[in-house]
Image (cartoon, rainbow, N blue to C red; front, side, top):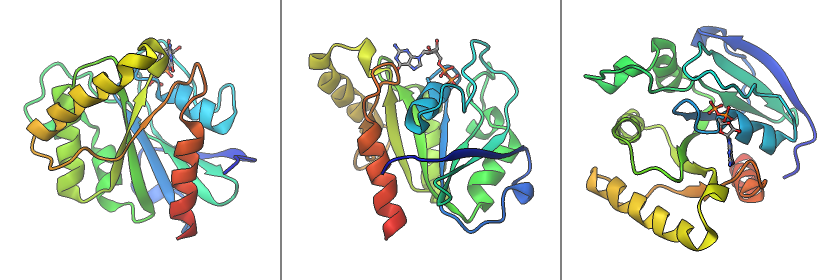
Length: 198
Ligand code: GDP
């Protein structure tokens, strides 16, 4: 799939105010600074559709972008800046959990993970939350250019072991991307295209 049009539609903090269009939507979420804005800009061929920011943890909203008049790309707030998290829910704003629990148009969530890092507790907790909530999700590894090509496989393998140790039977479907080198884009857009055509 080629992205011809990417149009900002609305930002808000209430699921009930999200667009009413029955278009399929795909949500992007991850810890602050994971490279989410850069990835969204790379996917949509925009320099600044999603604002890249050096200020981690800044207040964010649910942002809907209409792609090719055919599906929504949803940019969700970054998470992970609460110092203590007794329950994973506490580190997500209520409207984010509302989004996952109520938004019927949501087809798949993409959880972004910095490929250089070991599995973080908050991310593993979030995978569990999505599993319990029955939200289909994939992992997008970001910043692959920061890891030598020959080491990418061993990083993913180490991550897979940690995901399995946290209770999953298999590693979720995953994509390897670099916004800097514009890699992983075709795989990701083809995946979305195939679901949209089902
Ligand atoms: P966000 O907070 O998740 O939206 O992250 P940003 O997109 O603002 O990126 C955070 C930082 O990581 C910025 O300094 C980006 O330039 C850098 N960054 C993002 N993606 C990549 C990537 O693919 N490769 C490299 N080397 N740096 C990246």
